[in-house]
Image 1 (cartoon, rainbow, N blue to C red):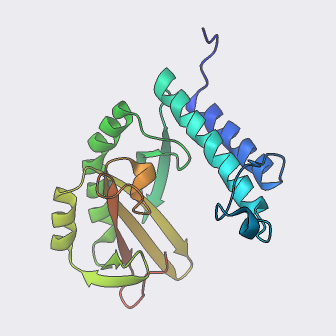
Image 2 (cartoon, rainbow, N blue to C red):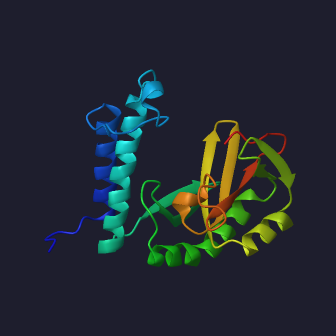
Length: 203
């Protein structure tokens, strides 16, 4: 019987501390082999891989904890662009989304899209293609089509004195697996970049 169930914020802090410990070399998974061939492995530095694997194992244990004790992966963000503000849910990048979290994300999709449409009118739109190595200019109707076939949305912004880029992520499945095509086709996402006319996406 667990006397105390950790909160989302506590799990995020625990993961951050563990990540630092792994990066410093305080945690290593010593049995990691690069090639599986002991003759070759003796010539390859494995400390980076050992640190990475140790953290990945710890993170997987935290994800199991989340499932067992129903600890949400959602954090709430606030974004203000062009004088308009939105509060929206996002799954922390180190945690997983529970089924109830996915319901929250799906419920927030329409308000995120509404906010996006308000703050990006008069901006140029680009779809990220080729694993974010290239951008293809699109129109609002294209965004609407993508939105119809996705489950949830996320939004972020890069702003400097003379530059504004607002990125809309439209995804499906587990957000943790959606960004880098790790979970494709069960999870995935498309990124749409809005920039001031004449500019090009940098995010």
